[in-house]
Length: 544
Image 1 (cartoon, helix red, strand yellow):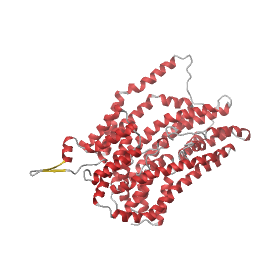
Image 2 (tube, helix red, strand yellow):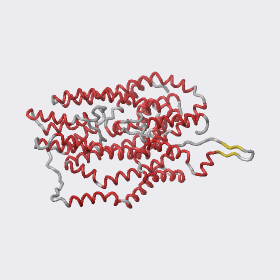
Image 3 (cartoon, rainbow, N blue to C red):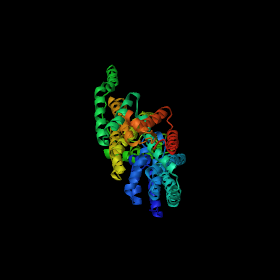
Image 4 (cartoon, helix red, strand yellow):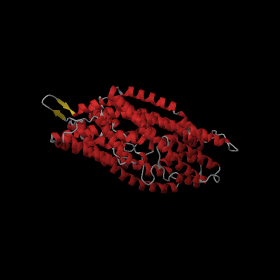
């Protein structure tokens, strides 16, 4: 098998488009994972089965990678578009593909950082058009052009690397000595621990840690599959929430008592609306499609948020006589903004629409700073909810459910997770946008104070830790080949470990990485450190 120029160009273009993160849920999934990219690569290369098997192995080392706050510890997307095609052409096994992917993923982060810097220039260019009230031109410069440049910045190097570098890479790999092959194998067995440790560190609290061990040892002792593991985890989570439900309603009850002491209690209801549900859906969909396209260090998601608001603002401030107010509104939403686009972007968008509508009806009574401060005040807490539920938990639960199919070469293993996540998160985002617009600030405020939200986060954390424990037991496969030989018998160190506690080596690896990440959230150092240690120990024949 060879990589033709046509295949190289198609793969480069696919990688570049994936890096634009369009639309948000689908794009962020392929941006931060490997498994769906493996489907695309398998289709282009004409070897779906092997591409999925390699992709499933690569996915294990990138579990836990999310772009919280715009920060990404590694680049699974770029790594997959280089490592999987090269592995297919060169006949590499999955462990060697993992070894190839790690440095490429780290390089991709630096390229993305340069593009984030560049995007700030285009955001400033967009400001000039906002001053003229030209939202369309602002969008072209701050969003569309940035997306095109991002596509080319990744697409062209990937195409060149695949077309000219794959053959040379194959020659180099053919000469790898056996001890180094053993080292690469050990590295591939250990590196998935980084992903599981990242997720566990993101979603865990000390009192929930036992659920990780419960999932881990349930798999070690029973060898059940992923679906039974999920069902067991869901049942345990339900029991925990049932017996601790008072914790999540106590604060809300206290707040209700305080409210009763006030002289007046305002009943919250849906306000008279200028925007139809179709117009709210339009604003939400625009935001959902482009939320990350023009992301920059200077403004983050502001140009995309402003674009989503533009058509509604035009309706609130119509005609030439309101042009000054329309421009001021556009400028309000071109200021720094960054959140998770479903749980954070939905309420912030709906709230901003409601507040801008109120301001258009009583312009001098509502200062523009109030709208800006409410939006920026909510974006952080809501982003924390979204990153925890959508990306740290739901995404990896769906991946974990479908990963066994991917490991067997079935493309459904890559398609299933992204489709499920997209449907669920799009619906959540639209619901939050519509409700926040209909009820204004009260809906977003009550959502943050609600005991139900705390219960959802707790349940997601418990189920996530339980599943990560079980999946770690399945996919972190490091063992030791050390033997003890006497005149009467031969035994292995691994058999001794298994008699004491099955899976002790994988558990130790995960816990060590987890311990490091709890003190220092430096994913780069964790990945590099485990890579070096496992490679050295593997080359020495101490682990496999």
